[in-house]
Length: 239
Image (cartoon, rainbow, N blue to C red; front, side, top):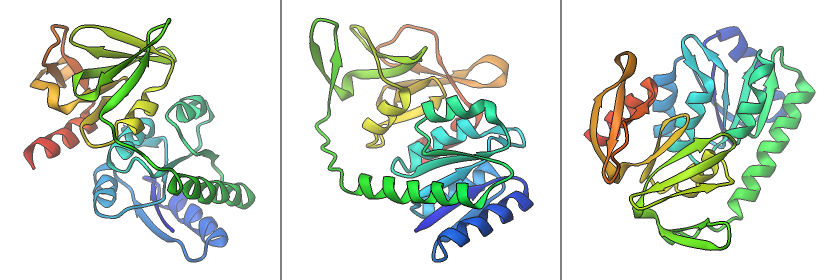
């Protein structure tokens, strides 16, 4: 089993690594203190789980979780933090578990057991890429061509799927669609937006010195791009 840990506090990383090794002595553990270095690790090596701190010295762990899901959709995410108030958000993002500091050996053991169980279950799941997506229309269903989807937007605890002709409100999370559409065509541009990279027309200046995406087939205002996501987006388009 290979795991990855990001925490900008070295003592916290050392403590968590020590406890994990009590539960899984043979685990290979990668670590980083900064977001860019952590994402580089994930591009180079496949991991079963990522342990992510919430407060990363200016970066937010929940935003980083979206980046992880873009790079390695099958990796389990465990938030390891001193902040209780992000638990609901973490599980909305599909987190496997939520560890609170100071860490406890038995609690870490339960987390490791959960990771192993979930990894085994996902390994037995067959994904069929049909390039189609079925959406509810209230009285029935419509089957969309995935290539016709411009972007998907989080709306309260649901999502709205936008095409050129119509939008569809669906009772599912953005993380669900991010995992369902994980062939590399779709990108989590910001916590509330999943965009079809084939539909990106322009990258333009946006609020507060950031950038926005103008999408083909959409006359609405540009969609915001998170600062961390912008770095990843440039890497995707420039390579």
